[in-house]
Length: 230
Image (cartoon, rainbow, N blue to C red; front, top):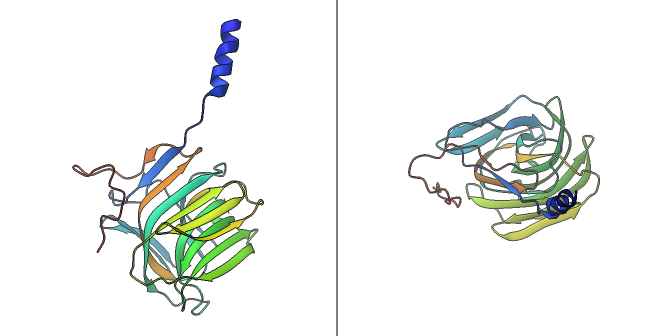
């Protein structure tokens, strides 16, 4: 009995370690990811070309590519991204964006609740931070940001507790707080544009250690910076 008690105390004291999920898309597919939509599931394409994920979305409503499940809570996601083309959509010139989505709840493939940060390539471009609950905005802020079409940016978003932060190339560009969306999926988002994504890394206590891309022979496992840059 004494041994059992001591063992139990040791187990309680053991720390939890965050897992890491990676995908550099060098395997040429999006296996392991789930497409979702804010509205209008038509008119969107996700494909991998030469080891880069490309999202094309004619509608100004978001199309997303996400991983995880409804129980994921605190996590950080980072990736390389560039927007290459604005596309005409039902909102005119207001929405040509790409970025990150988190704390996502989905019903039949449609977003119900979500939080996000996007680079919006309207004129002039902005950082768009937003929250979406029951398909209505609970947070909607656009801040000027000097971004250019065709330029690669490294985006990092932190979803922790009720605080959320976004970094572009290492600089914090947006943050907000909300307690109404505690858990959900995480991933990439695109609307009204063509965007490219690469080198996705997601870490968190609920995240499994997993590489969704098959590593080619001779590729260094530590090469997660911008290595495919044109």
